[in-house]
Image (cartoon, rainbow, N blue to C red):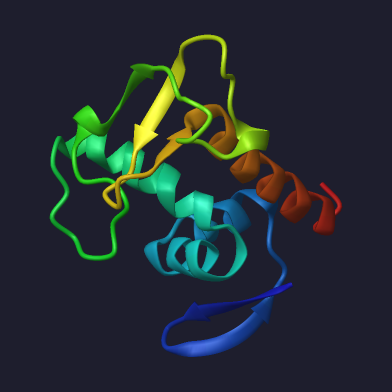
Length: 123
């Protein structure tokens, strides 16, 4: 059971998985996940919005333009050792702070976060 706001009142109501996932995708919940659970969730959000809108104007973004994501290679000095394929091309995200991240590693972190959340709900 999760707190649900209906008609300005707080209630404890049984939640179906569909309702829970819909609530999770609301903007407030996404911000909570990004700040407190999985920072890479925010990066996926930025990459997605960057491709949808071409240029992002909101504050606290990690990626501004759709052109910051694409096929490329990363050197040993540019990447986290445990996240990168050093001998071939991969999809690379160029963050606004100048660093680079492999999209596969970012996505794996987010998928792991969702798997843990679903396991906690016994789904």
